[in-house]
Image 1 (cartoon, helix red, strand yellow):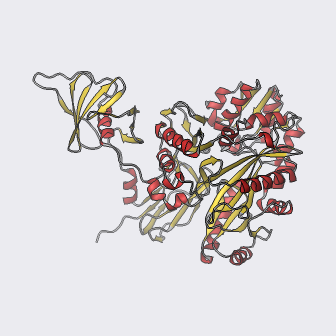
Image 2: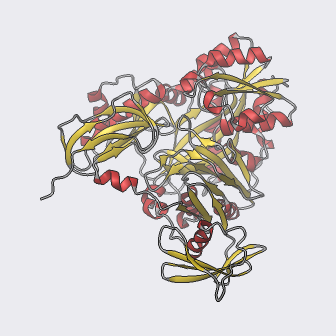
Image 3: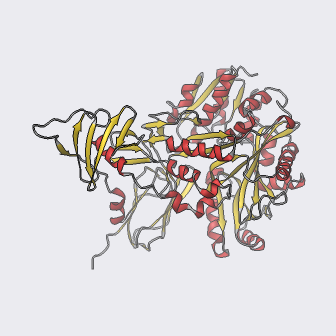
Length: 640
C-alpha cells in the first residue's frame, strides 16, 4: 500500500478520498487554487500545495503543476477523483513518465473510451449492443442533417468527447436541426475543446441504467447496476441502486456486457459502463444499448457501496498498488436498496440556474451518509460546480430507502444561498418515482409541480416576525403599566407583536393573530408543536418548517421587476459573455435572443423580456461579469 498519495481534485470527492486514505493509514496531499485556500479538503489533508488561480485552466487542469506538487511532497501516487484531469490520457502518461502511479486506468484504456464514436465501434466489435446512429467522422452540417433524417426524428445530438449533458441536444423536427447542431457544437468546443458530435436515435421512454465495473488490467467484475434516470437537462439528480423493475435475466445480460466492455480494453480500476434502455415495455434484455464508458469513479458511487458493502476508493488504492481484484464475482451480493440525491446551490424556479453565496447555516440530520466539500461559512464559488453535498440513504427495501431519503432531505437545512433542496424533497415524494415508474422524461413532464415553491405556513410567517424583532431565542417578558406592549415590527407586510408572558408572544400578521410559545423542545404556534428551526443572518431570516422559507431583512428590493420595467437584461449569475446578438438601434421582439452567458461550463441564452429598441449594449463577448450586471438596455417604452 502507498505511504502517501496526492489528490488532484477539490471539494467533495477530495474529502471522500481522504476519508478512506485515513482509514488505511495513507497520508494525503491536497492541491488548491487561490479560490480554495480555505476549503474543507485543504483542511482535511495532511499537506496542501497551491497550484494557481481560481480558473480551472490555471489550477486544477495544470497537470504539470500537480505532478510537481506530488514530487515535491514525496507522494507516490495521484488520485484524480472525477472531472478535471480524471479522464485525460495525456495526464496519465505524464504521471507514469514522472515515476508516479496513476490511481485509475491506463492512458490507452481512457483513449479507447474517450470518444463516444470510437468507443461505440469498439463495443460493437466486442459484442456489446450499441444504439442505432451515425458515429462517423464527417462533421459537415448537411451530412449530419441527412444522417438525422435517415434515423428518423426525434434524434439526439451528442458531443463525442462529452459528459454531464454538455454538448447534447434533443431535436424533434428537421427544421430545428441546424440551430441545435450549432449550439451543441459550440458548447462542446467550450467544455471539451472538441466540437465533433454524433447523432443517435432518441429512445422514446428511455431509462439510464449503468453498471459499475472494476478491473485489475486482466479480469473484471461488475458490482451491479445503478438507475440514473431522474435527470434534468441530461444531468443526474437522484440515483439509486439496484434499478427498480430489474429482472435476473436482464441484470445478468447487462453485467456480462459491462464486463466484456472492461476486459476488451484491459481495464484497471473503477469504471462505469452506461446503457440506455427502452422501458416502453418493461426492462427486457434485448432492449439495452451501450452509451459510453466513464473511465473513473462516478459521483453516484456511494449507492453501489451501500448495496455491496465495498469501499470502491479502497479497491482503487489496493489495485493501483499492485494487488489483484479484491473479490470474485460470486463474492458480490446485493444488500437492500440505496438512493443518492445531489444537493446543489441553484435557483430552481429560475430554470435551475447555478447560484453562489455564503453558507451561513448548514445542517444534516444524524444517521444519514453525507458527502460534502463545504462547511458553514464557506462560499459557493462561481468558478466550480455548485454542488453542496450528496445525501445517501440505505434500507432493506426500495420503499424504506426512499422514505429515509425524503425524510433526510426534509430535515436538511441550508441558509445563505438558494438550493434545489425543496425540489429534491418533492421528487422523493413523487408517486410515480415511488412506484418505480421512472424514465429520463419524468422530471420534464411534472416540472411545474416539482418546481412550484410550497405555500409558506402561517406559523413560519409568525416565527419570522418574532425573529425580525430579535426575540426568537429569548422572548423575555413585555411590561407596560396596564397591558402588554403591542408594537409594530418591520417586515414584508404589516406586522405587530406583543410579549404576553414569559416565553409567550402574540403575533398579528395578514389579518390573523397567532399565539407563539417557546418550549424546551422549540416553538409552538397556536397550541401546535412546530419543530421549526430559525436562522437569522444580516440580510435574511430563514425558517425551516416543512421546507425552507426565506424572508428578507429589511424589506426585499424589487430589483428584478425594476430591471424588466426599465428594459435591462441582467446577468442571472456570474459568468463569461460568450456572444452578443444585437447592436444599438436594433429592434427586438419579446423572446428574441440577446446574448449567451457561459457559467459553470453550461451555456445560458438570455432573451428579451419585452419588445423594444436596443439603446445600449453594456457588455461584449469575452467579458467576465458578476451576477446582476446589466448587459443590454432597451429604450424606454413610449407612453401613448
